[in-house]
Image (tube, rainbow, N blue to C red; front, side, top):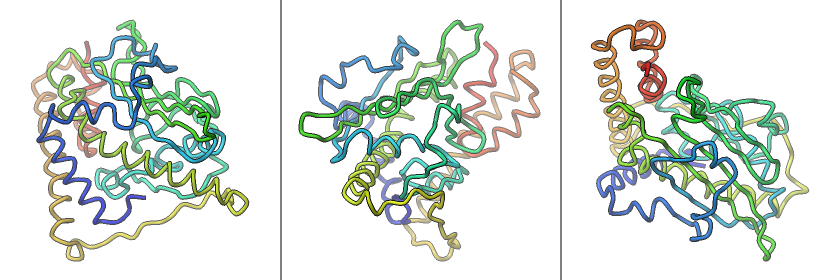
Length: 299
């Protein structure tokens, strides 16, 4: 479930490799696991972002029915079931994530939740829910722009196969902003390589969890208990783990400096809200600068 420091350090190395290779591996990253038909399909929710700047489509086959897979999707989110990805990396940037390995009965209604948190201070609204089939999350934009989504769209789709298995398809779409900071934070050069490594881990873990639960359904209990993590001191980390932490910290500092610099020189009338408030928000790890460039700048 992405909890070991070794797996998280390896994930950082993979992210760095994908960032360095850039467009070379982009076709592989954008269609990992998906068939040509799944890539070409217009999935529910795509209409919310009709002209994305870039899109990725990933897919896996799960040895379980859509009804058995759905509970793991329904409880996605911070403060819920987690994202089944690299928990320690997520928590290094303040996500406070706790990935669960069991179905949580109290988190099976994403429509009632209204939004799925990626971080304690960042969430994606739930745009569409069809239990057992589709879960669509969308970043709603300002009404003045007359478009349903400005940042991105993240959707999950379950479809049964003739063999009795399930295809889980993930689609992620972004529309580039008009300013250079927005373009940076919706750029496939930055976001797509990192999100690929995280999504790949998530889909693989959902495959394992749903498949195991399907085979042992009578012994699966629906509780609200999540697996706790143990905090380790810096001196207890290996050199590779320390390098991973420092790499993420450097990325965080670079993004925060860029956001603070833009905020300092941008006229107050071009900022949505108080500049002092945004200065504090930017300090919230990687999420703060992203929110500023997507929501803080008045168009």
